[in-house]
Length: 213
Image (cartoon, rainbow, N blue to C red; front, side, top):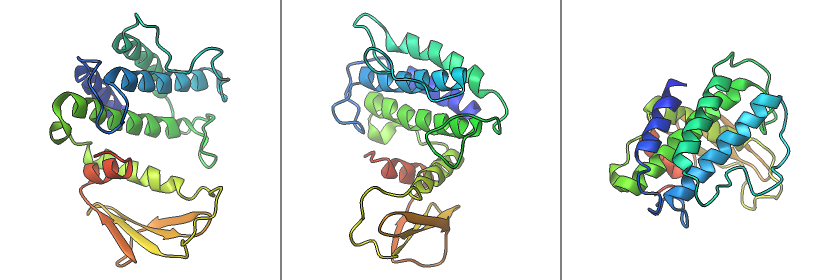
C-alpha cells in the first residue's frame, strides 16, 4: 500500500501536460492514460463497496470524463476512496476476475502493479523513456510473478507449436520456469536450464512483458 501511495503521487506529479503522447500506449495522451487509471479505480471501488461484480455503467465506460473535468483531481479523490477500501485484511473475501483468488489481497497486489506500470507510463511521457524511474525491484519481481501466474488460465484457442517447451524467466534474484502447452501453460520455480531464456533487471523485464519500450 505504501508503494502504491508513492507511485500514485509520482504519476500525478508527472502529469502536468495532459496532451503529451504516452510511448508505451500508442494512440493515448496523458489525459487518456489518467482516464484509464481513473476507470480502474472506479471499478475497484464499486467492487469493494458492494462485495460483488459490479454492473457496467449506464453511460460511457468506467473512466468516462466530461470535457471540462480535470482527471488529475478526479484521480486523486478516487484513490483516496480506494485506499480506504484496500487498508484491510488481505485475506478478507472479495470478488475478483481471477477465479483462484477471491480475496482483498488480490486487489492490493493488482492495484500496486497497475499503478506502478502506469506511473512509469506517465513519467516516460513527461521525461522520456530513458528517464522514467524504475519500478521498485521487489514490486517488479512480484509483478512478473503475477503476470506469469495468469498464463495458467486455460486458453480459448489452441496455441500451435506449444509442445512442452520450457522457458526460463529470470531477474537474477528470482526465476520461473514456464512450460508451454497447447491450451495452457504451467508455471513453477525456476530451474537451471530451458529451451529459451528471458532475463533482465526486474523493472525492465516487467515493463518488457507488458509491452513497454
